[in-house]
Image (cartoon, rainbow, N blue to C red; front, side):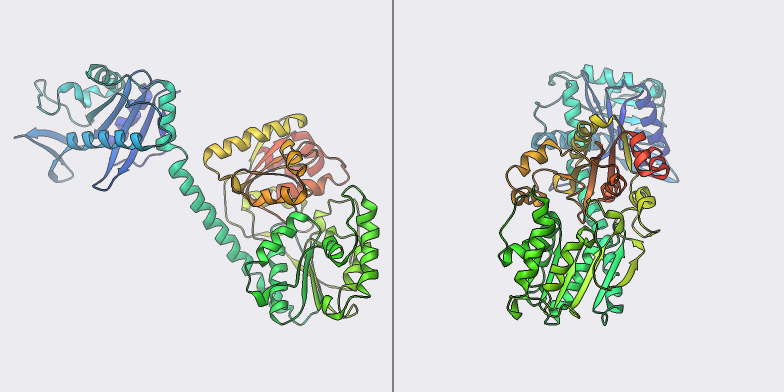
Length: 545
């Protein structure tokens, strides 16, 4: 191993500069760090330090590198090469960058140590200095020439030990803090945020292209739009509801899951008032709003049979103004067959009222099965728009039909093999590492496939409304289960494959989990379990990522 270097692939000003940096890196100890091309700016100036060497127990050296033939003539430093002969100021440049570094650390909130031992040096990797070299502002021990190249690290160490009246050298933790300050989360996170925003904008533009589907279906009152994960169904559902409301119709936009319902509520709140549906929420809350007594979350009979039957009965007595001209349903594959009678009863014209249904048959993750009880014109969506090519390729074999991947290229999917019982703990470690890399908490979700994460259990104990509110909070990542995360997405998802309650639905649950990330997916689990559930194609793509 050699010293760490930031960035890993620097852009060098000359071949001599590259030669010097590589020779220096090769001879430094493993715990030393090099920063190449580090820029510093303040109100007066903008400077670039060619190389900064941070060496635990020795010190920090700021080195200005000058290629070509360099010599001192009549008190002026001159550089000759490429047909040019110009005056240069290597000592001033090194000294200024040294003080800019010191000032930067003084102001940085994560630098808690005192001023470190600092020295400025000049490297002339293509020049051989005369034996009697002497300069008032640059003694021989502060300059490295061509003959010093094989011993560059020793010369830097010698210079740092030679300085007097300087603070103690940095400790190993100080060097780690320096890495954090110069190459850590501050600037890279800004880049990451900009990159996430750019990819989100690209996804949204692609998704908006899907509006052409609605243009072509404008005259059809009853349609089922089927599409795989990432095809933009939720965006289309909101857009259809918006268009119908803008036409003056009384519209209901509904789904099954609470999390998706809250997303729809927040999305619709950004529309102009005349474009907002009259009702946005879950199918069941519509009935409770009509007066059906609330039931227990654990009483499946209430949700599957009692509440829908009561809704049919109540709907028959509702005033005309409380029923709907049109109903739009997202994630309709979640609806039991017994619910469709209540859906139709909520229409002012149950026989001919407008009904738009958006579904993905591959995401039938609940034990109940049901299909709409009326004839709907089936329309397929065959493009994935919202996942990167790498993520979409990972779950493409699980989709109900072949989809064309139009999303942007991104980073490889990461796979962390572990035992099933260790998947949650491993996912916790991965999530912590992503936060340390600079991923904002609000961009990250940790999802499980079987037992809920302890943090999710704790948050849901405060009530479902309080739990789902954490999806929009920015102070921590979101902890969820694939069952409740359908229709939602995050830029980054850590999927803990911690088993499956029912392996008959495991394939569908894995499909949902793999498709919830837009930009970065990390999967933690047992490769053999994933192969058994998802098939050889999924296992191969994960393990070769």
